[in-house]
Image: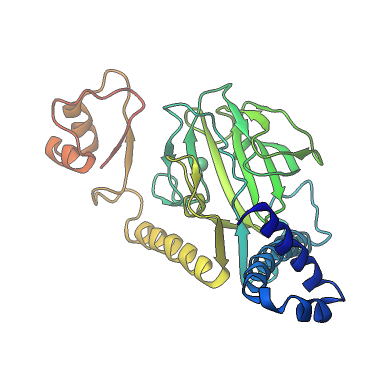
Length: 306
Ligand SMILES: [Zn+2]
């Protein structure tokens, strides 16, 4: 379309949405096909803006007046919406772009601790910058010695809340507004943590969503522009994971020698045969279960399944 034609079409568009629309359409009847085309484009754009506004408002309504700066999980399950469309488009990676910044522990039941892991762990070193995943506001800045260590909870306009745990330092304050990608803390190893990493959670009204459903951390990107949360499906998934883990725990009380349910942390000076003897299992069994060879050098601190 040349400039003149565009001008004409734009003028028509203006006329069609003005109170003079009916008269104008009569006058411009010969141009009707172009007019319709422009109107379609325009209404799609307007509709999108309307949806975005609605979602923004709705995220405020979702939490209402509930702004608790002390308790990270101050929500009632009944208040969680049945479905909720989460806009992920302005996502920023919470960890720096370094080769080691990978997912080191996934969302789900963790036999090592006998409970659910309600977020994921991303490898960072103490002092690495941690970034806000979306625009938002700092709701919680606390220390929890037996859990998150130094941690932050941010609430975002898209309805999500994100949690950043085991920090060595918090760089923002309660009620502070932050932008996606803004430094909010430094990575660390505080609280219930074994080795420096970022524990990262995504929740909607306190209900944890597996962050890997929303983000592809290897690609440093979102899995999709939007994620449609479904309360029933998400709660069922969560309960399935937790009860599968609990069933294993009951079937295998402490002291039982059923293999593959216990973890052993390698100490300095250990080797496979020493460990096997100590644990009362065979070297072959250890190798098979841990996908290692008899020649594999075991570093102190490594966890072995047995
Ligand atoms: Zn974690």
